[in-house]
Length: 124
Image 1 (cartoon, one colour):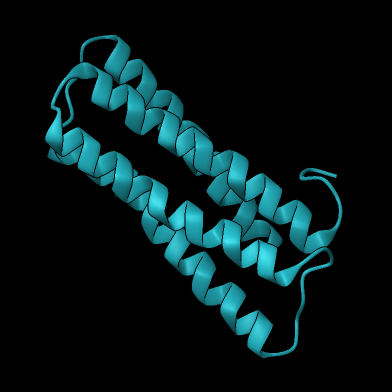
Image 2: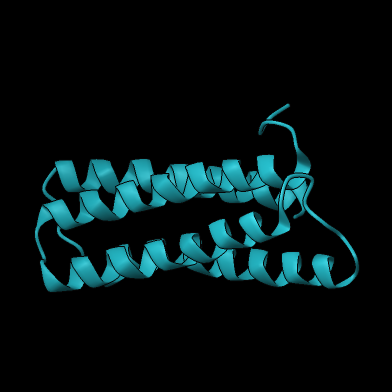
């Protein structure tokens, strides 16, 4: 896990999450461009998966548990697509809010993944 990539991803998911929650609370229904914003988080998670896998194959290990780290990462990869499926199935403003909370959930998971990898809390 690369620190600067994690910091960027946490800020990205917090900004997207707050933006989508606000968008939904003000009546915005999910549409193509809104869904694409959430997909940027998925792309970043795939990049994190590739980088972390490379680091692990090169001999790097998480301080706490490499298996737990990859468990968190794989679950985080499932959250944005699940929120998108929800948004496509139920096109109401609440689907936008759900997508926002999905992004915020990913940010929390990223901070926990950082803690698992480094053994110290995020931001320390």
